[in-house]
Image 1 (cartoon, one colour):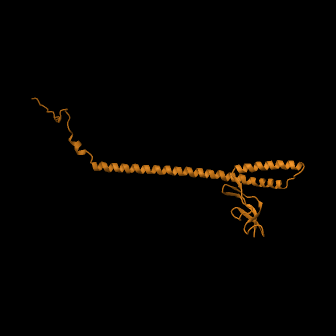
Image 2: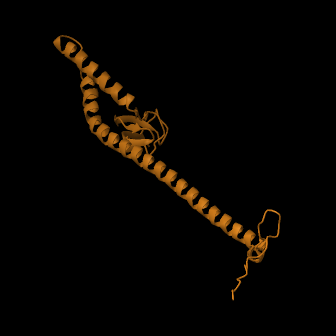
Image 3: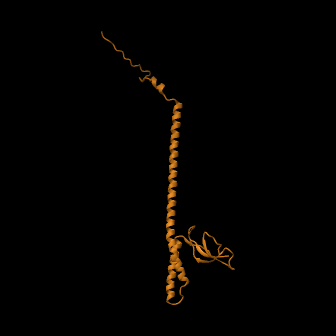
Length: 183
Protein backbone atom coordinates (compact mmCIF):
# COMPACT_ATOMS: atom_id res chain seq x y z
CA UNK A 1 0.00 0.00 0.00
CA UNK A 2 1.43 2.99 -1.12
CA UNK A 3 0.33 6.49 0.04
CA UNK A 4 0.25 9.21 -2.42
CA UNK A 5 0.81 12.72 -1.17
CA UNK A 6 -0.82 15.31 -3.26
CA UNK A 7 0.87 18.58 -3.93
CA UNK A 8 -1.10 21.33 -2.20
CA UNK A 9 0.48 24.23 -4.07
CA UNK A 10 -2.09 26.29 -5.86
CA UNK A 11 -2.04 26.23 -9.59
CA UNK A 12 -0.66 29.29 -11.36
CA UNK A 13 -3.27 31.91 -12.27
CA UNK A 14 -1.48 33.30 -15.27
CA UNK A 15 0.57 32.09 -18.17
CA UNK A 16 3.87 33.07 -16.54
CA UNK A 17 3.22 30.69 -13.72
CA UNK A 18 2.82 33.38 -11.01
CA UNK A 19 0.21 33.27 -8.33
CA UNK A 20 -1.71 36.34 -7.22
CA UNK A 21 -1.47 36.71 -3.47
CA UNK A 22 -4.86 37.36 -1.99
CA UNK A 23 -3.38 39.03 1.13
CA UNK A 24 -1.70 41.84 -0.86
CA UNK A 25 -4.99 43.32 -1.94
CA UNK A 26 -6.23 43.31 1.65
CA UNK A 27 -3.11 44.99 3.17
CA UNK A 28 -2.76 47.86 0.61
CA UNK A 29 -2.66 51.22 2.45
CA UNK A 30 -5.66 53.43 2.30
CA UNK A 31 -5.06 56.55 0.09
CA UNK A 32 -6.56 58.76 2.80
CA UNK A 33 -4.12 57.31 5.34
CA UNK A 34 -1.18 57.91 2.96
CA UNK A 35 -2.32 61.47 2.38
CA UNK A 36 -2.54 62.09 6.15
CA UNK A 37 0.96 60.66 6.67
CA UNK A 38 2.31 62.82 3.83
CA UNK A 39 0.70 65.94 5.31
CA UNK A 40 2.14 65.11 8.74
CA UNK A 41 5.61 64.64 7.24
CA UNK A 42 5.29 67.87 5.26
CA UNK A 43 4.24 69.71 8.42
CA UNK A 44 7.24 68.26 10.28
CA UNK A 45 9.56 69.30 7.41
CA UNK A 46 8.09 72.83 7.43
CA UNK A 47 8.61 72.98 11.20
CA UNK A 48 12.25 71.95 10.82
CA UNK A 49 12.75 74.46 7.99
CA UNK A 50 11.21 77.22 10.08
CA UNK A 51 13.43 76.35 13.03
CA UNK A 52 16.51 76.30 10.81
CA UNK A 53 15.60 79.69 9.29
CA UNK A 54 15.07 81.19 12.74
CA UNK A 55 18.41 79.83 13.94
CA UNK A 56 20.10 81.23 10.85
CA UNK A 57 18.48 84.66 11.39
CA UNK A 58 19.42 84.59 15.08
CA UNK A 59 23.02 83.81 14.16
CA UNK A 60 23.11 86.63 11.58
CA UNK A 61 21.74 89.06 14.20
CA UNK A 62 24.27 87.81 16.75
CA UNK A 63 27.08 88.31 14.26
CA UNK A 64 25.96 91.88 13.51
CA UNK A 65 25.63 92.65 17.23
CA UNK A 66 29.14 91.34 17.92
CA UNK A 67 30.58 93.37 15.03
CA UNK A 68 28.77 96.49 16.27
CA UNK A 69 29.99 95.90 19.84
CA UNK A 70 33.56 95.40 18.62
CA UNK A 71 33.43 98.59 16.54
CA UNK A 72 32.06 100.48 19.53
CA UNK A 73 34.78 99.06 21.79
CA UNK A 74 37.46 100.11 19.27
CA UNK A 75 35.97 103.59 19.07
CA UNK A 76 35.80 103.88 22.86
CA UNK A 77 39.42 102.79 23.22
CA UNK A 78 40.51 105.24 20.53
CA UNK A 79 38.48 108.01 22.16
CA UNK A 80 40.13 107.40 25.53
CA UNK A 81 43.63 107.52 24.07
CA UNK A 82 42.92 110.55 21.92
CA UNK A 83 41.28 112.39 24.82
CA UNK A 84 44.53 111.98 26.77
CA UNK A 85 46.43 113.65 23.92
CA UNK A 86 44.21 116.74 23.87
CA UNK A 87 45.91 118.48 26.85
CA UNK A 88 49.24 118.21 25.00
CA UNK A 89 47.60 119.84 21.97
CA UNK A 90 46.33 122.61 24.27
CA UNK A 91 49.88 123.13 25.55
CA UNK A 92 51.19 123.42 21.99
CA UNK A 93 48.52 126.00 21.17
CA UNK A 94 49.36 127.97 24.31
CA UNK A 95 53.07 127.85 23.46
CA UNK A 96 52.35 129.07 19.93
CA UNK A 97 50.24 131.99 21.21
CA UNK A 98 53.23 133.15 23.26
CA UNK A 99 55.93 132.23 20.75
CA UNK A 100 58.76 134.71 20.20
CA UNK A 101 58.88 136.23 16.75
CA UNK A 102 62.57 137.25 16.65
CA UNK A 103 65.90 135.64 17.40
CA UNK A 104 66.74 132.07 18.32
CA UNK A 105 63.36 131.63 20.00
CA UNK A 106 61.63 132.18 16.65
CA UNK A 107 63.41 129.15 15.16
CA UNK A 108 62.43 127.08 18.15
CA UNK A 109 58.82 128.33 17.86
CA UNK A 110 58.79 127.28 14.19
CA UNK A 111 59.75 123.75 15.28
CA UNK A 112 56.97 123.75 17.88
CA UNK A 113 54.50 124.92 15.20
CA UNK A 114 55.60 122.04 12.96
CA UNK A 115 55.03 119.50 15.74
CA UNK A 116 51.64 121.10 16.45
CA UNK A 117 50.61 120.81 12.79
CA UNK A 118 51.67 117.15 12.68
CA UNK A 119 49.78 116.32 15.87
CA UNK A 120 46.71 118.16 14.60
CA UNK A 121 46.89 116.25 11.29
CA UNK A 122 47.12 112.91 13.12
CA UNK A 123 44.09 113.76 15.26
CA UNK A 124 42.15 114.92 12.21
CA UNK A 125 42.98 111.69 10.37
CA UNK A 126 41.62 109.75 13.35
CA UNK A 127 38.32 111.62 12.98
CA UNK A 128 38.71 114.24 15.69
CA UNK A 129 37.14 117.58 14.86
CA UNK A 130 37.17 120.87 16.71
CA UNK A 131 33.89 122.09 18.11
CA UNK A 132 33.26 125.47 16.54
CA UNK A 133 31.99 127.64 19.37
CA UNK A 134 32.88 131.29 18.90
CA UNK A 135 29.77 133.30 17.96
CA UNK A 136 27.55 130.19 18.07
CA UNK A 137 24.49 129.83 20.31
CA UNK A 138 25.40 128.16 23.60
CA UNK A 139 24.74 124.40 23.47
CA UNK A 140 25.21 122.56 26.79
CA UNK A 141 25.90 119.35 24.83
CA UNK A 142 28.95 120.95 23.18
CA UNK A 143 29.95 123.79 25.47
CA UNK A 144 30.70 124.27 29.13
CA UNK A 145 30.01 127.82 30.28
CA UNK A 146 32.51 129.09 32.83
CA UNK A 147 31.75 132.81 32.56
CA UNK A 148 28.63 134.84 31.78
CA UNK A 149 29.44 138.40 30.72
CA UNK A 150 27.75 141.41 29.24
CA UNK A 151 28.50 141.81 25.55
CA UNK A 152 27.49 144.47 23.06
CA UNK A 153 28.94 142.47 20.17
CA UNK A 154 27.12 139.19 20.76
CA UNK A 155 23.43 138.37 21.27
CA UNK A 156 22.35 136.90 24.58
CA UNK A 157 23.08 133.19 24.93
CA UNK A 158 25.85 133.17 22.33
CA UNK A 159 29.48 132.23 22.93
CA UNK A 160 31.72 135.29 23.16
CA UNK A 161 35.08 133.53 23.64
CA UNK A 162 36.57 130.07 23.80
CA UNK A 163 38.81 129.48 26.81
CA UNK A 164 39.64 125.86 25.99
CA UNK A 165 38.91 124.23 22.67
CA UNK A 166 36.41 121.35 22.58
CA UNK A 167 36.68 118.25 20.38
CA UNK A 168 34.38 115.60 18.91
CA UNK A 169 35.04 112.12 17.57
CA UNK A 170 32.24 111.51 15.10
CA UNK A 171 29.07 112.49 16.98
CA UNK A 172 30.63 111.84 20.39
CA UNK A 173 31.93 114.79 22.38
CA UNK A 174 35.41 113.98 23.69
CA UNK A 175 35.71 117.22 25.57
CA UNK A 176 33.29 120.15 25.66
CA UNK A 177 34.59 123.61 24.85
CA UNK A 178 35.08 125.89 27.86
CA UNK A 179 33.42 129.15 26.86
CA UNK A 180 32.31 132.61 27.90
CA UNK A 181 28.63 133.28 27.20
CA UNK A 182 26.90 136.63 26.63
CA UNK A 183 24.16 137.69 29.06
